[in-house]
Image (cartoon, rainbow, N blue to C red; front, side):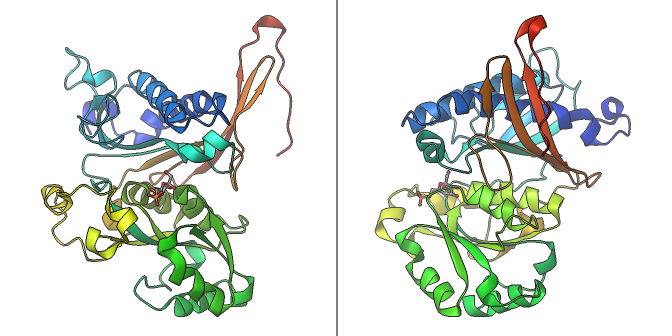
Length: 352
Ligand code: VTB
């Protein structure tokens, strides 16, 4: 961070509400397309909006997790410079920030109007977020009360007993979220055998992971294999929520044929070039998101477990977001009315 700009003020004060504007705007664009059955289009409008608003932020931002490599994605690609500091003549004026984005997490969820699609990002000082490639990742995510009690390499049954003990309940009272995929056949069998309840989801293990760290969400853990980039953003959220993620990259030879075909053949080399020397080891929350000054921001696109989706009405729209930082340990649920109806518009009070 350039000290003269932030002058000792925490990153929160400088950028928190700017990032809130970014995820709100992306969520609104995506939500407009809800149910159209066009997942790529939903993603595209979210990406474009996120990119546009990002450039109004006083920062020298670098996308470290984004829409893919430069030749795959026209915007928000890995390595892209964003923010006011990216404009020529502005070099050195603003703080350096690394940013991981998922403009529409759960494109299918939005395309079908299903629960838990979100617009999300994490930001940190330079080097504060692992540059994870788009490769599968095995994950175990739990909340603060369970932190330190689980081990991704332990049998599923043992982890479930550990979670139940920490949460002072029976294994039968737990709900574990798992993505509904053939690769999870054995995992689902193990959870069923241990007696816990399961919520199978079609997509969106990032928002499910966050729910696991929020008491009262009804979700006690996320288990299974999802995307690596989503794992890093989950880790950023865990640092702010005092939860825990343990993760391991899944190399092509460890996957079933269908998944293997989605992974770039040179993945091992790419990981090495990103500084990941031993991809087979377990990464903990701090290794995935080592930053000391992390900002996390997410806005609900469709209704979800902990965030409501965008609501449109005559004189505006209403969004609900989760914004948090490691600096002040404030977890903010932000309910925003975007008033646009002119002088006759009104704001309704909703008791949450
Ligand atoms: C994962 C998961 C995401 O897409 O990346 C998944 O982490 C893709 O997995 O939350 P498959 O290749 O098995 O479909 C999401 O569900 C949504 O982006």
